[in-house]
Image (cartoon, rainbow, N blue to C red; front, top):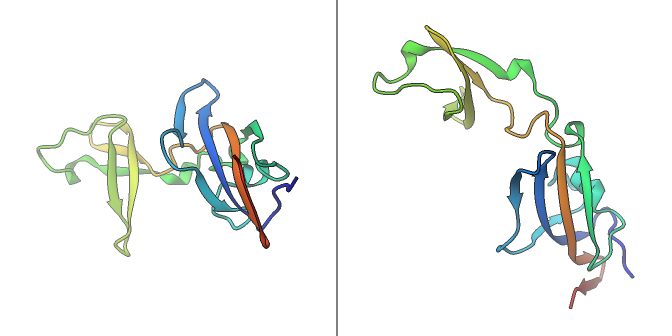
Length: 151
């Protein structure tokens, strides 16, 4: 049986959870996720987690934060003057906002703290600093000239 190796294009069904069991993403009800193994399309721990799998195989992998979205970075926390918010907006902890950088690119931030004259915005990835657990089912492996599809 063909095993997944770097450079293969694979299709997987997955269920992503946090260590407390909270689901953060799943392919349930959707087409399987397709990606090229080792091409940098996935977080490193997911990429390496599918290596050696065969079609039809199911497994659970735990990915430490360092092999997922990295640790929480303090430099991604920024203080923003509260008077720069629209007057009709009441900033609240947990609220997601979009900011733009000097090049016009938009990126999401979450309000981490509301002070009297400023808010602390967190631009870390929402899954930064978290261990991720994935239940994976290998559906298809396309490598070289062969294609294997699960019946």
